[in-house]
Image (cartoon, rainbow, N blue to C red; front, side):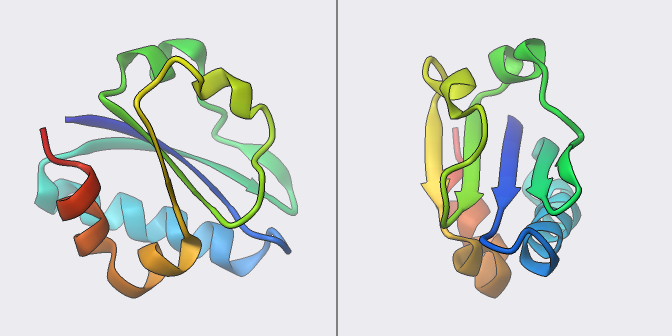
Length: 100
């Protein structure tokens, strides 16, 4: 399964990057290929291309705030997840949201 994700938090510092790291580390054990865009204090990093989004089976918006350029994901199979859910139990996120 191919997943793309966007992580963002209100301050754009720690939780944005902690959630991205948790997703990347957990993905292989759930047989998921993942690319994560972060929208933090440094701006948008690892920007997801239109091709990345189109090829994804699912888009995870991991944020408790609105993300920049959210309209890019309107045609995609998108799920919004709180940052806290990823940080507390990333495996559950994959089990619940990333099954075929």
